[in-house]
Image 1 (tube, rainbow, N blue to C red):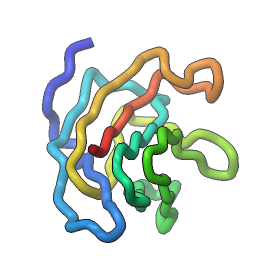
Image 2 (cartoon, one colour):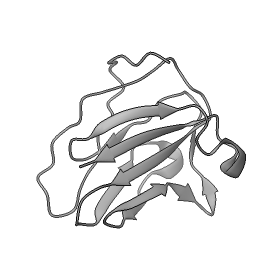
Image 3 (cartoon, one colour):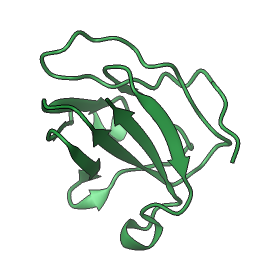
Length: 114
C-alpha cells in the first residue's frame, strides 16, 4: 500500500512536552480502521481524538506501550478512513492486517512516537 501526505490534520498531544504538529499522512482511504499508538518514550502520552463521537475523551498511553484506543471496551473505528488527533511528532503507518480478527478493524493506523 502506497503512503502519501494528505491534509487530514493528524497529530498527537503529549503530556509535559511541547505540542508540535505531526505531518499529515494517509494511505488510500481505509474505512473502519482502528487507531494504535506506539509510545516509545519514557513518559505518559495523552491522546485526544477530534471526533464528535469521542468529544472530550482523552486516552493515556503508558511509556514503552503499544495500545489500541478503545471506548467502552470497543476499539474506536474511523468511518471515513482518516483520523484527526493532536500531539508530538511521530510517524504514521497503515497495517491492513493489524487488529482485524481481534477487534473487528479493517486494519489499523499506527502512530509511533519516538
